Length: 424
Image (cartoon, rainbow, N blue to C red; front, side):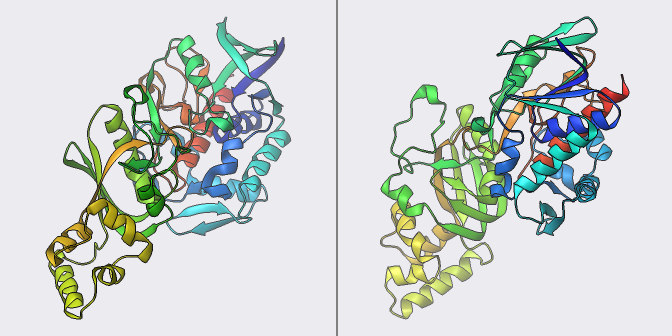
């Protein structure tokens, strides 16, 4: 049986941060990763560019955390975004700052982030073992016993679970950490996909089954309506989410229609509430204001003037919305014939009922996770099992896009590793 002071399960952002921090404090650390390579999910974040953090201070940053926003404050303050940026640069990786306080590697490649983390771990003495899929964890005296599917056994004084959630399962995130936590007495808050595509009614060729709970595969074929909408990118529009007819959220920004459905920055922002509402059986719809900077009265006047010029309906629309949007707009609204008043109302409130969502295969992050009532926020140690720590997406914390989720992974990993090493 191989022994170590600290064993970290999961070599994503949180796991690599945990392992490096603990080893830097003098602990003997083993990092176990079931995939052939570490950092698989990091490699695909930010479309392969890796938006590794966001430089907002805590007061601003916490507003982008979707659940349990107060809990990670201690972790955040122990390893702030500015500190994280400086750390990467001290390890030789240059960074750049982009719109919205987002930080990226200057190379434009997520591989730079993974390489920097791995080299730092190796330099601090972490033993990284890949292809080591953990099958069971158990308490053994004051420490822990870890077994792998290949029959290897490990023991440690401190155990850090940083296995991620359920999103992007192809990268290795298949909910293993939830099972390990449950086996040691922890409760798991309901999990569901967040920051994912919402599917408008009639977008995909399928009939929903009750047991699907509105989960629609990204690979499902699109209808003619879906094909017409797919590829349209809308800038500076207002998106409002309605749950059972009541407005539940509203966001301004960029929106995209993809082979999955409705995405983009503001599509992702409203997706968490939309998915949870769909799972709970509520009726969900979105309303898009295609002309948020113009009042309906002024828009009606402009449409009237276009008709007075003798313009045909399609030409009127081409003066108001992107040409590629005209066909699906007419298909979904029935506005092949319209009055100026009706058209202006619809342009200010284009309503699309939502029938489902793309699941974990595409979701950026998992909402829900290990119940935070059972974890100390100052150390990330379990309240139920001494010497057991948690870090990253496995915890019931998730945030919006923009570098917030990776910052949470890095800072909770740092705090868990620091706490475990200091308590040896």
